[in-house]
Length: 499
Image (cartoon, rainbow, N blue to C red; front, top):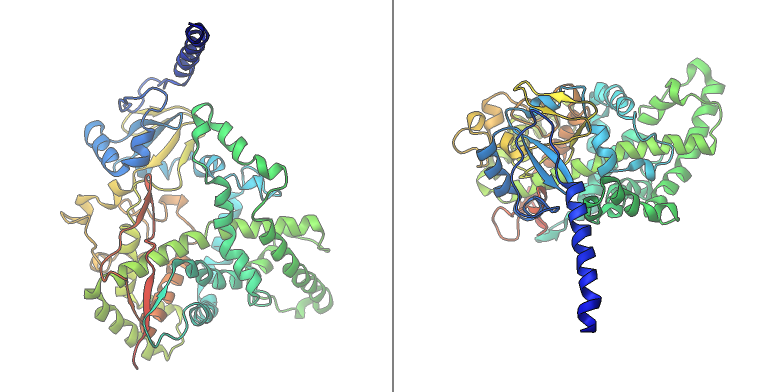
């Protein structure tokens, strides 16, 4: 009897609290919004399908409710756009990628000198002018650094050697370090490792699923970033490493400029580009200045090395698991290698048309259901079909609805079509309405030309020097986390080619 009288009020209060939360959190749609997909579980909404049945769930929603549609996950209404609507998202000024990424990736909590918003434009400008416009000048250095990494991370393989995926971020990081901070310190292994490991260590902060978002979207970020406010910072060591090695380089360059004047020969790297920019003009390297420049460099790192190494890894698995492509792609690399005598130029990289087509296909078939970079409406927005979303709405791109579009890729759109790009004059770095790996429109990734070039050069060198296989001898399945994908984890087998 005591148990009964004590527990009934508790159950009543739990019931009341649940009802209040449900009333507060139940989706409230505006007029003319995309249709809301019905869900079975109050408060939880579609979260379980989103996490554990993403591909089938989104395919069914798309078939029944068209494009776009709304779902309810982690306490928020999300608008999902497919191949008919998504291109609008990347063109509209009312939809911001940086605003949405502030919640998913709160870099400003770690890189203290960055503003919570307003850095995108500067980043795009630096990448376009400092890297994209000077790609041919970086080609020799890129391949030199990639060969250093290949020899160091894979090396001589007279017998089959199993290589794990953890080497590829370092392989990609070495050329990126050379371009960002220059040849003086990019040879330093601690700096290369700092660049390679920064993103992984940062994302470890955000590894907890956003369960608290069921209460309020901001609550999750407040809690997961709380340890940073009390001194726990897994990436502080990377910042410290870069500052230690970069300070003397910056001080020497300022001194050389002062002494040499017009005779000063500026190095070709992003650090020099920044030193000559009005935003970074200085006569002395203070701690605040060093923080500012290092924070910006790591911002470039987080949007470049992780995605490039992920796609390089995926391309290697796609190559290793498809023996029917080995001879054809190898023969193209041999011809180009003989033509350039082992020293690639940008013109030679452009001649890798079969390899480029293969890279485009491995990017297209990466198998992520949604893009990892959502958008958020900074004001109410009306699609061309008349549907409207309110200010603050998170908008996600239904990627495989675009990349497996049968109208664009034929009845076998889900198959690996290695020469579709070559046959249709579609380079891997070109964006269009049926290929969203690098975004679309004016918001396309400005570093895609460098990323594709680095992947192609690395594949070129690896295919020339090694036989590459998967342990199973077949195409390995990618790893899925909800609607997102990552490369297989089985490792790759490398063996020297006989020459």
